[in-house]
Length: 279
Image (tube, rainbow, N blue to C red):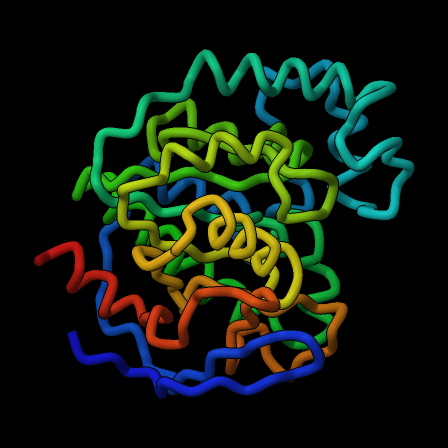
């Protein structure tokens, strides 16, 4: 396969960065009614007042507090005490009750995929990134729809509160196969051993944020799957964070972990991803 990316490294501080040329996604994916409703429920600022998954209704006040204010008192990063420890136990039970074993040779991991829409939409609007963020959401939901059609497994790499609020519904509806919860506002998994199920599979990956949680997830993939030769990064599904004051939420480069074995040629567009699926 010919790559659209230059095989070159640039070094920014202690990060290796793969540069790519920006391309437009020309593939339109039809969403089913359920997935279309999920999309509408959080796009354009709707995520601010989203209806919490009823399964977690007993923790709604805590969930809403932590969606709206990511600096809220969080106890430990691993949710080891207080109300979050109880919520974590319930979330793990929910995952165990709804997850399915991986059946495909290809797996898509999505790190904190709805974070901006559920927790930072006001800031996105203020910084004039709302349209780009909704374009990302459109592409993301299209990929989720395509993955279900092609029977590609999806694993969410998700925070506790975003899972309880929204993405748990995708697991219930069968759009994703499994969920790995992360530490509070980190891309590092609470159970990194669950990534071992990705060994001997082709892994595609996207999420948020570039140079932050998504980079941490890439580090775990690099370390657990060493060498990570079968990992492909979907540049159209990677978001820049708002706190770094990027010009756009669509990254011009993807940051790799320091000393990573990942290569710039492993960054691909959605069109290339769809070509992989049709091969």
